[in-house]
Amino acid sequence: MKKTIVIVDDHLLIAKALEGIIDNFEHFQVIYVAENGQDLIDKFNSNHEIPDIILMDISMPIMDGFESVLWLKNNHPAIKVMALSMQGDDNSVIKMIKNGAKGYLLKNTHPRDLENALIRLKDDGFFYPEWASKIIFSNINSDPGAEKAVRISDREKEFLTYTVTELSYKEIAEKMCCSPRTVESYRDQLCEKLGLKTRVGLAVFALKNGFAES
Image (tube, rainbow, N blue to C red; front, side, top):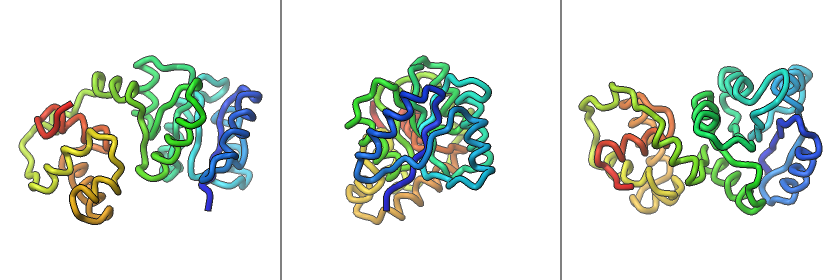
């Protein structure tokens, strides 16, 4: 079954062109387009289907991407939001991710790269290209509490070394000779111990504390 996508973008021509591209992808289909965050909320309230993934522009009238992704995090946390914008500055990337976006792409992304990013978002729950990861690593200030001593098992340490790679959780499981569910448990336990929420946060912690090399 294909994963459903909603595009939120006030430029209708761009949104429709994007819809045509995505509908040719094997694993995804666009079910409708919204002009801004408020339009999306109105469609949800009028019983439109809730999608698996939302591609969210940032600069929009009435309710922009920053406000929209925060609303989604608070009201529909299961939806995976991928920012898709012309804005690639540090502030935009960090604010969208802090507000709940699970990925970030620029609008000049090649269709093949967009499809790959959507697959990674579907399978891993997040996707940040290398340029966005560099912004995140250079701007995120870890919670001081994360640097205090915590009890980390040898297997959790091994998992931390893989968080900075491009390996999917399934591929990490193969490297560690365990099931993907076990890898997910390492992730969840570490996030709880360190007060983190994402793989990116775990990767930053791993780099800062010598569990992995950049």
